[in-house]
Image 1 (tube, rainbow, N blue to C red):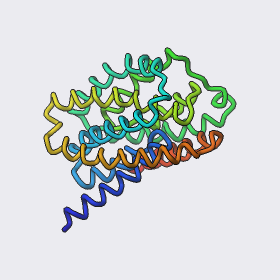
Image 2: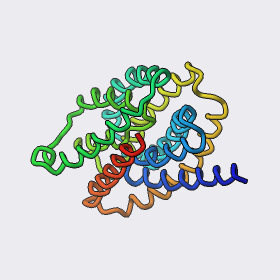
Image 3: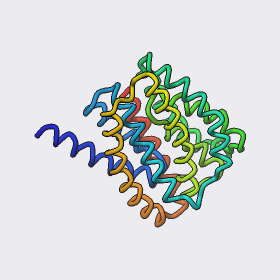
Image 4: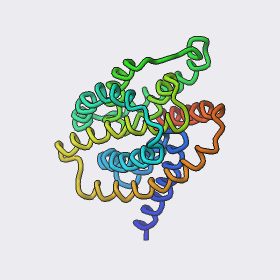
Length: 242
């Protein structure tokens, strides 16, 4: 009975998390990871989350397939793929609790920065996605997800709503595929992890559909404030969880 309760809890959280991610572009992993650690343990949680997030992001790419900036994804991938390989190797050999707390502090500072004179004028060019991909790929392999870290830069490029959600999701898919290859090479990706991740991913596909319907009705001027609210929440969660 307790196992059924655990699975039901994970499924319910996955639905809520994927709905949030479909609206904000991120936040799903930040919500899911503590629950997965509780249900499956730290070492299994990250690979399971990666499989589930791969499916969740693929669903967001599909629902926003007409609003993808492939040039952004290409430059992002140039930096993300080698860095995700390196991060996956480090994850296989070292704990990352301190990095989680550091990421939490960074997210809170990003929100503060966005409201300064310099932050309001922040802009990133196309080539800026190469170093962003490098940092994101490395941290994603260590922490499971860095959607909150990536968000301000995609917004600064000028992507909003469906363009932001779809492009960020496709960039994240590149990282997750790379990470899964590394995890598999270090025997961190068991058959059980894959099956559990696929099951959670199926639930997240439904959440992505619901979130897309919400996103289509969300006024564009409210979108950045919603992102900041999730950034603050994720930052505080990382500080506590780390």
